Image (cartoon, rainbow, N blue to C red):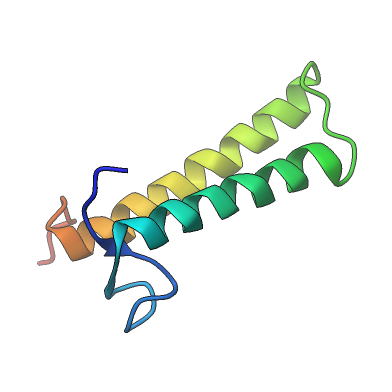
Length: 83
């Protein structure tokens, strides 16, 4: 949405090369649709069930941390120091 290229599975090499901003918006929208389908339409997710909400939140946090470390490596983000 910022108009800048970013990684996507459709770039070369996949996940490291840059894709156009349009491809990234479409890829993000697809991910939201799949996420909605998995959380709200598959199985029995209860928004008022603390266990369901904590599990979904923990999954979102873990994938966000993984993505931050992966894409930080490609964009000069903070990296752990190596001895």
